[in-house]
Length: 233
Image 1 (cartoon, rainbow, N blue to C red):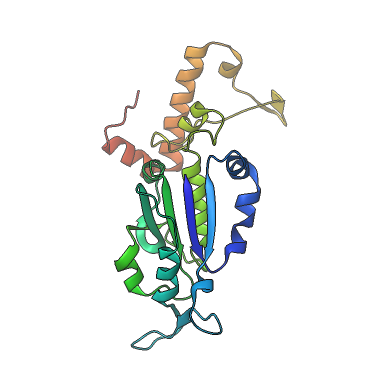
Image 2: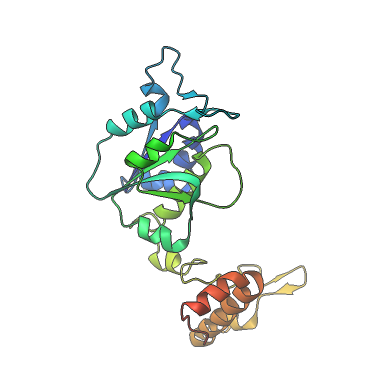
């Protein structure tokens, strides 16, 4: 998987590139994250990339020229998708994450200020994606969220495929409760069934707890799961 991140603030991505599973996946050449500062493609002598919006209004809008120039400089693969991280997009879901993991290259455009010129979206964007209904300074954090989520489904990034498949939301439900040592902690005990060694009973308990957690903590997810014909036994 190749990520082409188009941003005014490439330094913000140092953390995700230099830590945890993403760093290991980059070192193994499983994924590649290329940062493109489209300010460098500005033809303005001061490297200015924004201007006041036509029709008036507060704030500044990013001009189309530097973004399109940066995009045209990319080595584009055939199996690619260009995404603008935007509150106007559909919300990122686990289903969408799995879909995006099937591409060889994702081009992520990070907006800033009051947004980007609409013509960029018309010319090169395949899809707009949002990570939630709240306001952020720019598209960099949403891009990091998308990279982290999608990369987990790229073969070789996570050591155990089973671990990924059992993650919360992978089947539309929240994951069952997890416990580790010690068996007793501040008066709270690990459920006996998990100590029994009886795999069938453990699997049944985990399924029941997954249902219970989803119903109680995320009734919206439970309703969606039921509406899609999810099994309840």
